[in-house]
Length: 434
Ligand code: UD1
Image (tube, rainbow, N blue to C red; front, side, top):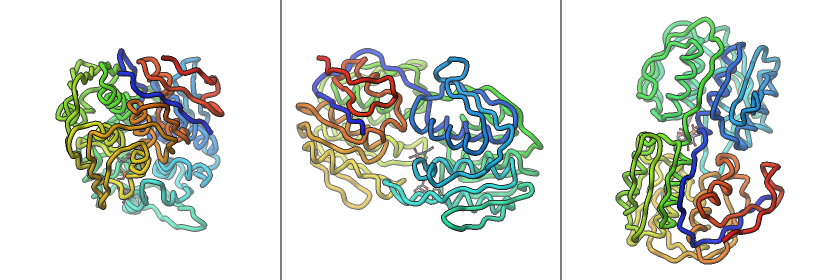
């Protein structure tokens, strides 16, 4: 199993470039199921979840060409025939976003068999709202042996009001509705940029959609969708992680190739905490010469503060003077990083959904364990300012969603190297550079 060895103390300086958004790429790859034509996606990140999605689509009979036309970040997908419309547990258990294939499979083939995702490190994560929406569109759904089986001759447009805002739920039903008969009106939808990104691809494929990016989306179903080419948005969570890296390390870092409009909630908090952000058209420069101040955060659906940035922000809060209250409203169990940060010297008390961080505490190196994708990013950030050499174990979690994070951070002055059975293959054991 790979590990990172990180020596703290270097302020990050220079320019770091953001990859395509994993959370846009996954639904966009699933959208290829909706047509027998070719879908070309640009700016696909080279991360493990994308390889998992490739396997998932290929297991159903799709042709998936990652790195198509020798372009590293381009993907070609063709679902000419889907001989086996099944998402097996072996794949679903490693990537919960696999349930995104439920709606498109049902809409295209009239049948889908998808393993139930079960629990995960950050909470229960049910898919009951996906199921309820598909039932409202006329699907018959049964459950046996840990699988959901959905059937429908042709889905019918419906009025769907989500009981709770769900990102992949909105995306799943949006895809299903594109091929349904008649009009679907979805209310209380997720407004995340990834929903708009998916909708842009669907429109390029011939779908009729109004209101994506707002809480009400109207879809006029069409008979068939065709091939398209689409460029994936930059990853706002990777960009946010780098902004925190620049601020926590007391550096001067330009995060390039991002969309600053997608990062407003984080930028406001960084300003409040004393890091200065200069915004340009597609980059943000973060500088932090002096000390950081405590600032409270409370996670919310977009455009609020993202739950996917909570763990990274907590690492920053350990280095801010004063008391920061961090409230997690989206997932019930998303404080797995707290114990590991505490092992490095952080002073954090958790009471229900709120963590109280008292800073500034010096962090010291330790062997720590990554428990999920964003928790592992927070440990890397803490290690950047810890005294001595931190070992972050189980970095396969970080490889799910960050493209070569150690190479990118090393490029701006961090002392980080990977050891173990390297992923991707070409990476070898590298010495720590000063
Ligand atoms: C997506 C993101 C994930 C992010 C999360 C919240 C992808 C691939 N993943 O996950 O990175 O952390 O949004 O921004 O885009 N819920 C239900 N029933 C459902 C669906 C969800 O109760 O049918 C609940 C969940 O348990 C959770 C909340 O709704 O408490 C939000 O979850 P949701 O937005 O669905 O998260 P994901 O789409 O899985």
